[in-house]
Image (cartoon, rainbow, N blue to C red):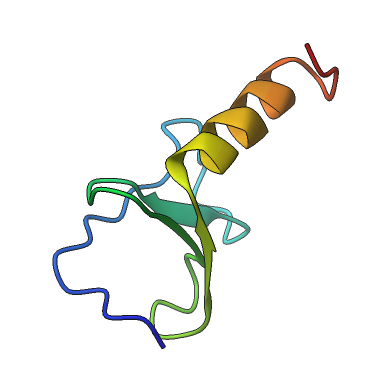
Length: 66
């Protein structure tokens, strides 16, 4: 498991606390972490900042790549 010391986790402002949320930590240089909000000690996915930006833009554009 990666060292998550210093990670600041946040959920989307659109999260309705229904339990099906993910949290992202993007405050540390060079890496973005993603985890299940219901399992804060469970596995995490890691992305480069560029990969994360590409993913977020893809989702914002309803799955249409630009």
